[in-house]
Image (cartoon, rainbow, N blue to C red):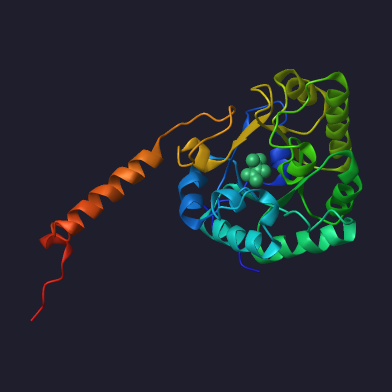
Amino acid sequence: MSTPAPNAKRRLTAPAARARKGGVPLVMVTAYSATMARLVDPAVDMILVGDSLAMVEHGMPSTLGAGLDLMIAHGKAVVSASETAMVVVDLPFGAYESGPADAFRAAARVMAEAGCDAVKLEGGTHMAETIRFLSDRGVPVVAHIGLTPQAVNALGGFRSQGHDDAAREKILADARAVAEAGAFAVVVEGVVAPLGKAITEAIDIPTIGIGASAECDGQVLVLEDLLGLTPRAPRFVKRYAELGQAVSQAVGAYADEVRARTFPGEEHTYKPRG
Ligand code: KIV
C-alpha cells in the first residue's frame, strides 16, 4: 500500500459532517458537471449531485426522469473534478422505494461507479428501515424530508410544508425516524421556519436547510439558482450573481463580432512557423 502524500487533500467524511451538529454551519451546493465542481469545491463542505439536474440540466418538467445511469454519469464528473468537498449523489425516483435490498443495489452502484462519498434519498418514517439497512452496510445516507420533489404529484405541486399542527407533527416524526435509523444528516426542504428550528432542536444529526430557516445546521441551494442562471427561482433562493445576463451579453457580443468578421482577431490565429 502506498503512503498518502503529506499534503494529500482529504474530503469531508460522513462522521466529520455529523460532528458539525450545532457547530460551524455546513455549506452544501449542487453541482452536476466537472466544470462547476472544480469551481465550487474550494468554497463548500459538501457537493450535492441532486436529481434536480433532470430539470436544470436536462429540461425535464420534474425530477422524476433522472434515472440511475444519468445520476452516475454526473456523479462521476463531479467526483473527478473535486478534491475536498464530500460528494453526495441523489438516489433517483424508482431506484430505492421498493425496499431495502433494491435501495442497497442502487446505492452500491452509485458509490462504486461514481466514486461518491454518500447518497441522499427522500422520505421520512416510511424510509427508516431502508436507511437503517444502508447505514448498517456501510453506505452513508443523507435523508431528505419536508417538501420532497420526487413526491411532487402526491404533494400537489412544489408547495411549502408544515402549515398545520398535523403536518408539523408528521414532519417532526419523519426527522426523528431518519435520525434514529442512522442517517448522518438530513436535508429539510420547504418547511415553515419555526418547524425548521424545531426539527434542528429535536434531533442529534445536522439539518441542512433549503427554505427551512437560518436555524438549521447548514444550508443547501441549487447552484444555478444562486448564480442567476435559472429563469425563476423559489422564494428561499438568494441570487448571489446574475450570470444569466452575463452569458447572454457575452454570447451576443461573440455573435456580433463573428457576423462583423472582427473575431477571430490576429491574436487568435496561428502563424505558419516556416
Ligand atoms: O435535487 C436537489 O438538488 C436537491 C436539493 C434541492 C436539496 O435535492
